[in-house]
Image (cartoon, helix red, strand yellow):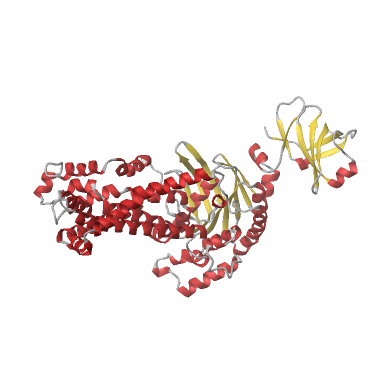
Length: 330
Length: 279
């Protein structure tokens, strides 16, 4: 195991940021800590990196089987990348990346040539070769983020910790960088934990998604697991769109995702529910229908392909039959 | 930036009145007095001027002023950085009280702070007998004047740094620590370069005030000519003796130091502005 967290608690004044976190992260994995703001995900990441600490006596952190609970950040060899990069603005790209090597005590500090080779190699790795003399202010957001990554990698970290790595970037760059990070992680193989509030990002990028809410872990699993078999109502609602439906005469709520709604003709005998199309939105590859159930008056969304929509010849105001793969969550 | 390019919508008369008023005020209360200091100083010729500032007591006053400044400014630079660091980078109980305490020297009259030191360290003061036994002289001597100056000029560096360090946050320091830097390395390689210009600026203001301080130093100095008279005190003594040419000559040195400070301050603002635009 690369990282083992046991029963971590952290309180700020009266606010309980983390309420007993237990988590094991295997070697070489790319793990997403996913949750809404205030769920404690960044606090947890900082505790792993030694930038914050559990309440005294409440929890232990191990990295590579070594208990580092009491160790300061400088002794943990955890590469940390900050949301707003935290580059040293008065230093060049080269000096930024070299920083972690230059500050080593003399006996373990590499020679000038060795540092130079390592820095240039890292800059090639993050595809920034040729920019080593620039100042951070002369780089784009995506480039700065990659400098921060190279800087963190320079210390040969045991784990790589990324705090909202794409949070400050615009949508296009975000997407490119996301794809790049995925293949980059495969290339370097360092156990990586990143924090995000974007479910899409977590599902696309991570091997393991840890869904957090109010200082607790709601579910840990592969993207498919947490999406297809959500362990709690919170996970269900947080990961992707979801409809809440009541069956006639029963008080409990059921969950169904829009793509799990099967649309049938109104007269179809296998229909479990009947509904009216209130609104139809068909721009893009798939069509989204807003439906109102005839029995319970609940509304729900359904997705279908454009081809299906045209084949059935549906339009707003039509009555349709539905089949729902309902999951009870209450 | 666009504000300067946009033509003002105020009428011509309003503008003329405002600009004229400002220029008039500045002329009357700043330029004329400043010019007068130099004309008065030189009224009896260069000979008298040179004599007035090279006379034994004047030289000793200049020397004392520089000594007191040379001790108190570095002290306050260190205290100021430490206080700003504590306030900006850590959260702890009593933080707002500490902030208020830093402002205290701005709030109380310098004369009061001088008197407090007399009450503490004077012959009949709290520590007076003990100091007397050990033959340590603080009041009416250089240590007392340094103490009074340090007290009065304490806020300048801290006040300059606190807002800047607060706005910069801790991320760069955290980054340095996570890369394996020690606390001292983090300070020297990350924090200090980030606060450099604000620190210079604070030191210059502190320096100007330290050289010009009158009230607090006056109380603790005892006005011993050639021994505990700083330049501002010396000016007062000369003036009270109706030796206005000499008084103004010495005052002109203080004014020159002030102008030099102003020039340095403008230069630093310009440099810091360049840097800000750069990043």
